[in-house]
Image 1 (spheres, rainbow, N blue to C red):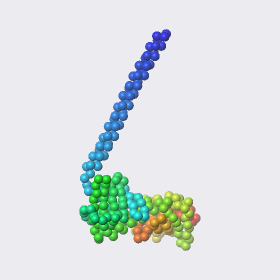
Image 2 (cartoon, rainbow, N blue to C red; image 1 turned 180 degrees about the vertical axis):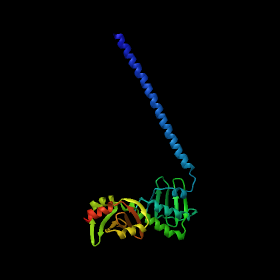
Image 3 (cartoon, helix red, strand yellow; image 1 turned 60 degrees about the vertical axis):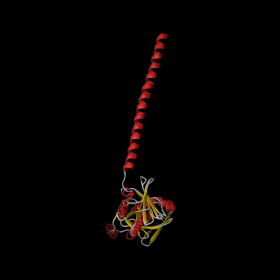
Image 4 (cartoon, rainbow, N blue to C red; image 1 turned 120 degrees about the horizontal axis):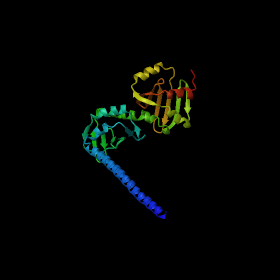
Length: 264
């Protein structure tokens, strides 16, 4: 009986040893496979980056997610429509040597590390390893400046940043309601954008609308006005910058029902 127990014990010990080596071997193979795959992916990414011999202005033109900052605001995501208009002007820029003086007033970047800056006389595009300068024609400077300003201060992404709001009023006819700070987030969350649009349809829609509301926002370094143009559109004005958006009806309904308590 003792002999059988000894044999059985030895059998379990040998089995445990064999199982340990089997598990170890499988884990080793899986780990090695993961390392090889990760190494291959890293190598492919590096090769793709090395193979991109295009000019930096061509590289930044191919990006879709662009963020811009100036002396007042930071990291505002630019609507693709505005970025498309800005990129059109790049064809008029002429590549030059590094200028003697350059003090940028706008800075921007893509979501993968290509950056740019401009003083409105020159346009600099750069990465960790490279940089290029382009001369902006005098005839293009005003339009370029206008597009960047509009893309920042009438950006839907920017206008919703309620943490930078200082004072907010909503106006309907002769009635003005002040929105308290603890309600800023409620108002901002009701702002749902679909897309940027031209002015014709919103203006026509406003003419047919029974109710129209105006939101005046005073921020840390800016003033903005948001006008509803029926349930479906809004107009954003900041200084001379103007943009129109197709929106969800939640903002219109919130102002009508919650702020002014209007019942049809």
